[in-house]
Length: 191
Image 1 (tube, rainbow, N blue to C red):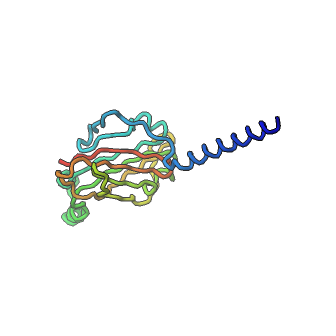
Image 2 (cartoon, helix red, strand yellow):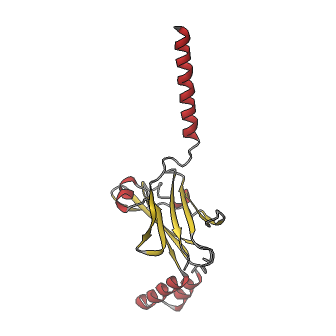
């Protein structure tokens, strides 16, 4: 009888130890749900969502993470239009023109619960080709979020990107959030 009790206790310890080890091996926390087919972003035709990240669900859980690619031509047009609207001095226009990233930029927009959680430096961005070759990696600048509503704080940042070569094909952009321990995946299609 005592042998059975010892055996049960040993098995229980073994099972709990293996479960804890399996949990420790999963640094990304719970996996995000994925779409069967990548969903096009209506605001940014170059980007498609792979992981489910709807606005309503993301606002409730504080995991809103969106990315968009802006081409140099698109950003130049915006600056030119702003110059007309605001009647900027030539020095202001030249300063904005020189600050444009030559190969375009990723616009990263996050909403998190609490101002410290909306720090973009908690994120790591990495772009891979279909064959798994890493072509881009970046960590955004640190900062706190601005109050967005309820208990959410928003932070938006431009991250200079590499030149998108149409011959490369589709890139997979993975954004890893170390605080949430989640990964958000996007598909970038150069034009």
